Every structure is written in structure tokens, then in C-alpha cells.
Image 1 (cartoon, helix red, strand yellow):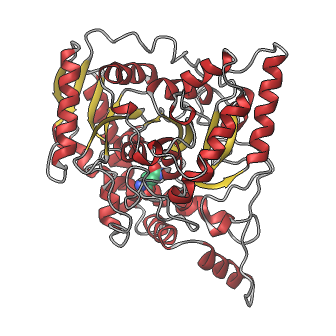
Image 2: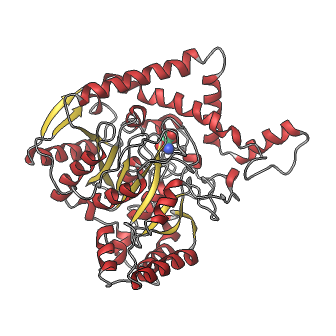
Image 3: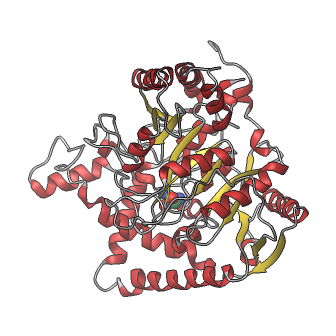
Amino acid sequence: MEITQATAAELLRAMEQNELSCVEVTQAFLDAIQTRDVAVQAFLHVDPERALQQAEAVDQKRRNGQSLGRLGGLPVAVKDVLCTQGQPTTCASRMLQNFVPPYDAHVIERLKAEDAVLLGKTNMDEFAMGSSTENSAFQKTRNPWNLEHAPGGSSGGSAAAVAAGMAPIAVGSDTGGSIRQPASFCGVVGMKPTYGRVSRYGLVAYASSLDQIGPFANDVHGAALLMEVLAGYDSRDSTCADRPVPRYTERLDQPLDGLRIGIVEEHFTEGLDAEVESAVQDALKIYESLGARIEKVRLPHSRYAVATYYLIAPSEASSNLARYDGVHYGFRAQQFSNMVDMYSTTRGEGFGAEVKRRIMLGTYALSAGYYDAYYLKALKVLRLIRRDFDEAFAKVDVIAGPVSPTPAFRIGELVDDPLAMYLSDIYTISANLAGIPGISIPAGLSREGLPIGLQLMAPPFEEERLLRAARMFERETDWHRRRPKLMLTPQAGE
Ligand code: GLN
């Protein structure tokens, strides 16, 4: 078995049957990072020593016959927006360049409790604001399928790490598409769970009413497995739902009989790339051949989703990011004349251009006199968008459509045009506004050889339905088995 091309299930099986030790598996991924990440630049921090220590501890437990957690030695990469005790957590911002959290995020505790091995922290758009990972203060991550192209964002590092076989599974966060869009661009599985399904304790906040943490993997089973570990109640996040977590992997292979799939008329209008559209249509034909019924549904207010999101998210961000004042965390400017100057110089030097743009937009939308016209209006439209989904899900079980209007764009292509960049979130944002789960699964390759994802969305807390529907498609196709050339040609030293 080529370790870095294997699925989570294959690796777990090999370790359980003592064909591979956890140290061997971990070392293979560390080697892959060393050789491939020179080109891909997915990781901000890698801690080989600590990873190998964790791996050794897992092997020790196995040798002693102790029972292991559900991730029994699987290496995992984590977006650098999640607090890791004693390890840097920068959010790809100069503001947190030297920040080392004194505690672990809830999901990091969960990963450790289930015996995952933490490989390192992945690159992202600064504070998760962006769709290309180009807003990182430190480096540009490249799409493993074509290094000239962006991996998507904001969780671009996690998606690229899985796509390039530098981690079998990874964790990201999705506020407006930041798991699903990079998953689509990089040809891996990525899922945003229901709002409240996963605790955000220790997730550095961007837009708190929308942020969710979710899994990346190279197949649906890997995503389902990681979901089982991430999900569940935690009293430290007051929005976290106190409801049991199904064993998503258990019934994954049971097809959904009489599945009703909704397609949204508004999704197939101008701006949708022809190759993306035909990949979606091909996917629908596969579902039909499996007995699913395709029905048209309408989400009439979805045309306002981008505008609504880009008022609500920056408004919340402007409040959440007020804490970076040069006193509480991280960076402080060297030169200033008084306290107010210290705040403004610190923020001026510490934040990148996109973050500043969001803070200004959000502060404006919340200011007296504009609050009613912008923020409050956006909240009202959000209500209408939610109602559209309620009505659609009265008729269908899942909604299928594109993830992003195009395959991965080129690095630099949209960076000077924020509006065009925002539009790349057009199909993903509604799920965040509605609080519902959504998944991206590999569903094609463009003529240029870039991955195309299919998005499925389901009603709140129907992650199991979503994963099973995704698995039905995966069983019939081999898009998820394709690997970028970069992985197939051994690099120097491999
Ligand atoms: N691209 C969107 C934004 O820039 C979504 C980001 C996210 O989901 N974190 O805000």
C-alpha cells in the first residue's frame, strides 16, 4: 500500500492488523510533507518530533493491548484557526504571529482523546477571510493539481494537504464555504456540519453566527469518521447542540431508498461554468440511475445571499476582531506616541488588507444611522433565505448543485477584485446563512485537469443523510480515487 494515497479506513485497518505501525504511517506523511510541501506550501507549522512521540505512544498502547480511540493513530492536519496548546496558532495573521495558546480547542481535545496524531497546522486566509488562501500573511498555498492555481479558501491549506497526500484527514472551518469550496478545488471530500453540531470552543472567531468546524478526507468514509469525533455537546460553546451523535460510519453504505433530490433553478444561471454544470448534470444522472427522483425547487432569496453574508459576516468580524489591540494577544507595534496611537498602529500593521476591509465594512454596517438600513435589513433577508430552505426541504431530502461557479482559478487572478472573489462563494454561503449542513464531493475533472465538486445540502442535523447520499455517488464513481500528478511522481528523497 502507498501510505500517502491510502484512505483513512485502509490506514486504520493496516495499523490494526499490525501491517504498519503508527510511527511508520506518521513518518510517511512527515516525509511527504518534507518533499511535497516545498511546492504546495500547505503547512504553516509542522512538529515532527511531537507527532512521532504521539505515534510512538499509540504503538505502545497497541503493543500493550490497550484499546485505542476511534482515530487509532491516524495523522491529521489542522487549520491554524484552532487553538493548540503549546503550539503556535496564528490564523495566518501577523497579529498572532507569536501566539501560543495555553489551551486546546474542544476539537483538538477530541482528536487527542481518540488517538489522532497531530501533524501540524495548515495555512489559511487571514482570520478565515477569503476564498483562495492568498490572504495569508505568510505564504501562498498552491493547488496540488496545478501549482499555478489556488487551492480555494479559506481552509486551503487543509484541503491541499489532503489532496497532496500530506495528511489522510484534516480539520477546517466554514463560515461561508471555507471547507466546501477548497474541497471542490482540490478534489477531496469536505463537509460543513449543521450550526451547533461541533463545539467552537477554541476556534478563533470570525463570524460567530455562521462559523462551523468540519472534516476533510480523501473519501466519504474518512469524513464520516472524523465527523463522529468532532461532533457532540460541549458546555463551553453555548450554541453547541445537546443531542446524540449518530455513528455516521455505521450505516454509511446503506443507500437511501426513494431519495428525493432537489435542484435549484437559481443555481443554473449565468456565471456557472459549462464544465461545472455538466459535471453536476452527470452526477444527477447517476443518482437517477440509483432510483433517486430529481425535483426542481426554488430558493428565490438565494440571489441575495452573497450581499446578506457580506454584511453579516463583516459586522460580526468587526466586533470579534476588536480584541486584537496590542494588549491581549500577540503583536504590538514598536513605535507609538500614546495609547490610542498604540491601538491603531498595532492594528494598522498587524492586519492585512482584506481583514481591514471587512472591519471597515462591518463597522460601517453596524454604525448608528446605518444599522437599520444594512445590518438589520440583512438579518431580515437571512430569515427569508432560511424560510426558502424550510419550504424546499418539505419537498425533497437533499439539495444538489455546484459548489463553486468555476474550477480553481489561478493564483492572482481574482485577488485585486474583491467582488469577483466574493462571488465565488455564491453557492456555498446560503447553507451557512440557513445553518444547514453541506458537503462537497469529487465529481469530475475539467479539461485542464482541475477537480470539480458536487455539493449536497440537507436539513439541520441530517449529517447522516448527507453522508449516505454522498457515499451512494462515490460508490458509483472513481473521482475520489484520482490523485494529482505531483503525488504519483515520486519526489527527490522519496
Ligand atoms: N470566502 C468567504 C469569506 O471570505 C468564506 C470564508 C469562510 O468560510 N471562512 O468570508
